[in-house]
Image 1: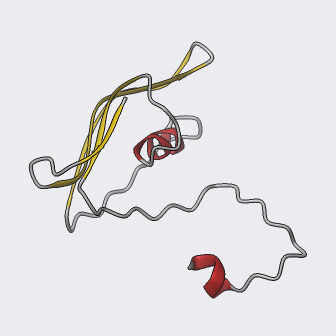
Image 2: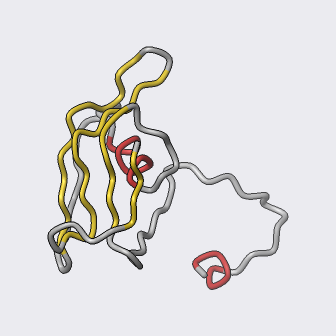
Length: 99
């Protein structure tokens, strides 16, 4: 997979032909996506449709089987995982967590 930081026709994010497999199972396939500056994008679908897998592939947290992900140089993406395990005894302010 090419996880390249570059400008692609003005897009902040461009995904082409993305496929992710795990244990011989196709998790997502045929994903084509461009996100331009100023756009608001929602990814919706039923449980198990591959929404989180797609986002994790865009972030480089999971390795796609094929396809490309290109991010504009300097692009920053905020991500809050579905499950985040924190030690309940850990002193952590909201400001510190978000920072």
